[in-house]
Amino acid sequence: MNLAAIRQALHQIPEVGFQEFKTQQYVLARIEDMKTPYIDVTTWRTGIIVHVHGHAPTKTIGWRADMDGLPITEQTGADFASTHDGFMHACGHDCHMTVALGLLAHLANEQPTNNIVIYFQPAEENPGGAEPMLAWLKETRRDLLPDAIFALHVAPQYPVGTIATKSGLLFANTSELYIDVTSVSGHAAFPHETKDASVIAATLLLQLQTIVARNVNPLDSAVVTIGKMTSGTVQNVISGAARLEGTIRTTTPEAMIHVKRRIEAICDGIATSFECDVAVDYGSSYYEVNNTPMYAEAVLQFAEQYPQTTAYKCPAAMTGEDFGYFLKEIPGALFWTGANTAYGLHHEKMLPDEALLQVNADFVHAFLTSL
View 1 (cartoon, rainbow, N blue to C red):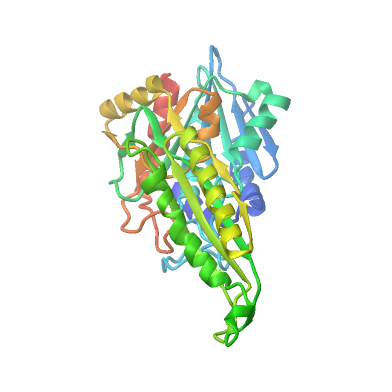
View 2: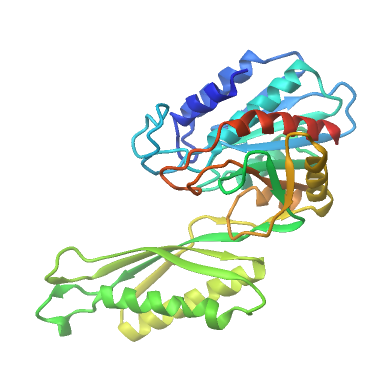
């Protein structure tokens, strides 16, 4: 199987959450090429679930690969760059799917002892596909639920062959943050007749930065970032509406609740003091990725002795990943895998080294079948 060709084909058709129609059809076609009597395929929305029946199963092992791209205009200059204007696989999900297909190729060639279920999961980036997929499995197809589940994520900063993870918290609790300010607009010459949304938004932006500094325990960790702020239309009109867009990240669910309460209290205070309306929307929220110690250590120990990989016990990161919803209910682990690229995740020039594809397809197959 030519994994590089598969990855390049997927890279050209990035689609956002629950819109992965071409992606689903392409992956289904590749799965069909490998079908055997012991492989069953189920679809869920734009996702795919592949059940590989073991010949003498005592357990079911899960492997998850996310599918969606991002609304980013690609600037890699690759000859296989995105053909979908304004969209890109800038988080490596094309590689994740390709590794999963490489894993399936191994399993189709030799039936495993235990059941292995591969979940091609849509909408990891937004609005979140893991939680509803898991809910559907529990309600409708409990036979497809695993006893343990695993996943990987490409890591631009590590060399190919690096397998990095840790026990316990690996990725943070995350939440989107959208704040809309509605006030009174007017002519720039008559500010006393208005409620300037630009000034209100600027004040709110600064107040939000006090939450982590003065409301979160210094021994805990949290981030409140406003990445985008918009207000106004032209230079001589005082704005009557503003919008702040950002993200919240914490290392505990309790801290997330506390930070949100403080955001709402500050917004209420701003609304009162400036006599305006302030509305808060949290968009998508993701639960922390908390690795089961036994399985995180198993990944690292296997990587230490596997000839093509190097194990690294890495620190936790404020990254968000909806795989946390799987680990909230099912034991397992997620690990970083080296992608050896100069540009970080979500960057318009991020282009992983394709050498990672075969290395990880082989490693994941060897690891899962060893359990």
